[in-house]
Length: 217
Image 1: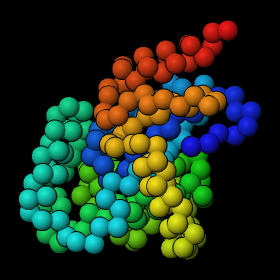
Image 2 (image 1 turned 120 degrees about the horizontal axis):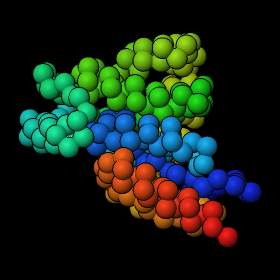
Image 3 (image 1 turned 60 degrees about the vertical axis):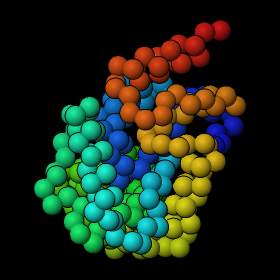
Image 4 (image 1 turned 120 degrees about the vertical axis):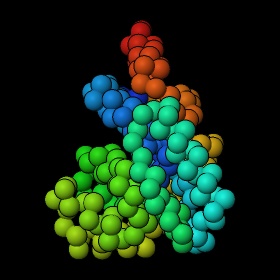
């Protein structure tokens, strides 16, 4: 992870995957972070790579394990899930396309990267849509006024695929072992703030402490 020379604001690195259920649970928290602290720190999203490149349909056992996690996320965070017909037979849980779509949005409308990330999450968890499919990911860009052909050209470019896998690599290099993870960077100082879901009051307190410490002479 690098920062621009002379970067005045600290950076909050958000390591997450659009098809990670705990990241969906954390979605209101990251939105609160952006709304509350955007003028005091820079939020940088790094796509984590939960199950990138998967080619085998999920087994019934894995499906049951995943749905168990979904119920736990719903219980703890209150985020809505659609369980009816979730993860149907033959579903290939490949998280690379959704991550690549987020990076494509970042190229076209950087200011809406997190919003599109949340749109994919909502489509997958609340609506049960297959966000591994190019057509679905393209349709989800329409509310942002993105030209479908322009999006798909970028989305299918080899360079964009390579950049997506660079994100996954950077996640491993940073020692991230679970999502969501928040890492604080201030100059050369890099610290992990939290790994896994934490409620907004906890995150707010952590960030206020860090920012207050940075303000002291």
